[in-house]
Length: 393
Image (cartoon, rainbow, N blue to C red; front, side, top):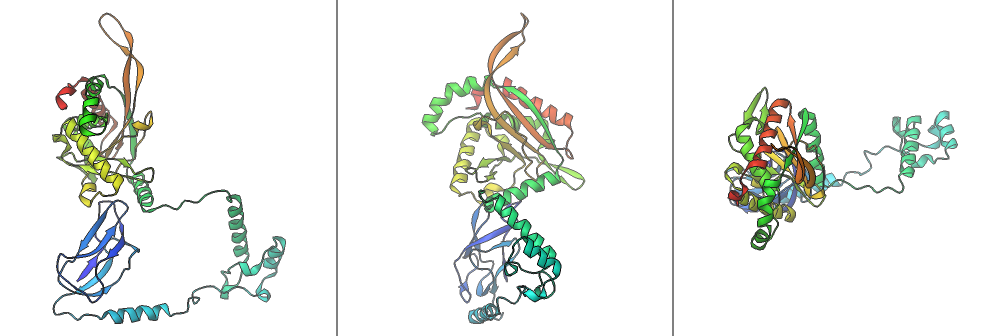
């Protein structure tokens, strides 16, 4: 029976072998731990799918392979077990092959064309430093031009630092590019007066911090209002499936969390619509702690139906977030700052200083139109501005 690289998240396409706990020839019971696997977002254990003897281990520790790749083979009762020594012998035989067999040979001086000789002389190049791509490894004019271009680029970037992408950054980059290619993104924004929220948040912040050990931010208030707005405008809580829109009955709210500027994850609060502000705040903090510690599990990262991002603590005005596939909407909550606001009253207009922030909604134009998104944002704004938030803590 094959042991394969599992699917460790909706958007995860590969995994890395962190550690093997068994070796070829070992007996294993069904459900026993075989190995540890890591992805860009989570680390987990892979258990034996059946009882038997491990006949081969195909992927060594430290290697990254695609989902579905056969990592090992377990011979169950009645099957022939391949000896571990045979596997090792085969590997040794492969390793003994000449390492240079596939490398192109360097061109000898008497095999250079006149044009190539002139280029070498003009640029004062050593032909032995250039690998030829021509027949029998012959150096061509194009080889020299490529060498010159590469050398020029290297010289101009002598003072630059090349920072390789780690697994988290690579996965984030791939997901973002795929999202922009999949969904026609549209951005809408709306400004919101947070006076009603601040009335409660500021009066409770000291007691909350003393009891919970962390600050009571605007985020859980916006999340609560978001869930209430989705109840009235449910098509933002959906995914596109071919030529149909699948509207989710539950709001599983994904929260974008920065990993110390080295990528991000979006763990999920399930059935968020049934939670009050206080409960949402506690769940958000718990997920943030796990994300920073690298202890999120597979369940934490799966099943999101809508995403909320919060760059506000960095003082941003508004952000155009990229949709978290396969969802169709994402909301960015940016900084709440004191601003002059025109207040209308029967006695006339006046200007007051109010806490105001901008909410930015990116949506998939395949799923909904601008009018639907605008109505959703308007409902979200009215909930934040008009609710009695004291009942939520």
